[in-house]
Image 1 (cartoon, rainbow, N blue to C red):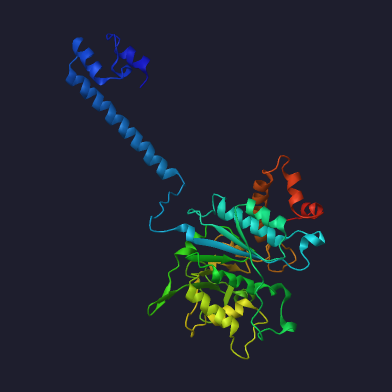
Image 2: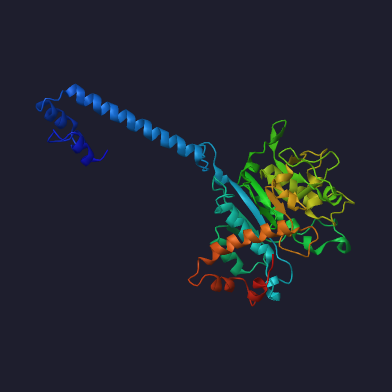
Length: 387
């Protein structure tokens, strides 16, 4: 309450109760002026109660109207032992050497922005974002990714198991994809959520880490992935979207673009033994590491794969997926890809623009100097990009 207002209300008093720091002093003063101590204490208690009620109302009202989610970290859960991981394995020759944008590199930066900074998609527990990079990734790109907050680890390329690839059948785009098996060696983490470089989070995805493990005997394991919906989508069909969209019985092929792994030493030994001793006559030429992982985690094998909801890896994304998907997975920047619809492509460029806006603020001259970090002579190409 305002002191002057109180003074006007108690104009007969030389001193106001609210203008004194000491309640004892005020009570003695009021007693000397004929005001009972009991009355003063009652008035003090009354105003204190009113103030408490007002404060409680505003705190309750703020809590009801605010969209801020308050999350208390468990003292028993070390979230730094769980990580998001991406592999950056550029094509040959490198796009920068051709004066072209490296869209996979740009997508890695977008993911860093989405997972670490964007207020609508960032991880609330500050889990780290790790990018595995092959020897063909330029040092300049590594420095930029680190400036974006990613932990960058150089890794050697892992070749396919001997005798499992027919060169004429191999898609050159999948040439280095066995390199993602380095994730099985990341035993410093309890759980790893792997996302291909071209996977775009559009909603919070940290709930993926809550996927329960499987247990057989005394051993627990966790390898969870989304069913591959390519055949379903090409047939013009769509399962009802939601947490239970884990595929029909006939949708029994997994997609290795998104998976959740508990990288134990047992699982690492299992995978590397299969890599060094593949069964005779098997061929992984068409889908490379994806076929290998489906075989390793086959339904009748020692570690059957666990199904994730399609929301975590919405393949062949369409505009109608934008209201439900957590992650869109496609070459979303490219108008030349038949599967990329205008609305989906626009979402990628909006996410790219958010990242560029943050990135350019690191420079005194903003966007002009930002272009210098995109490789040699490609600013015209970037400026000519159209949604």
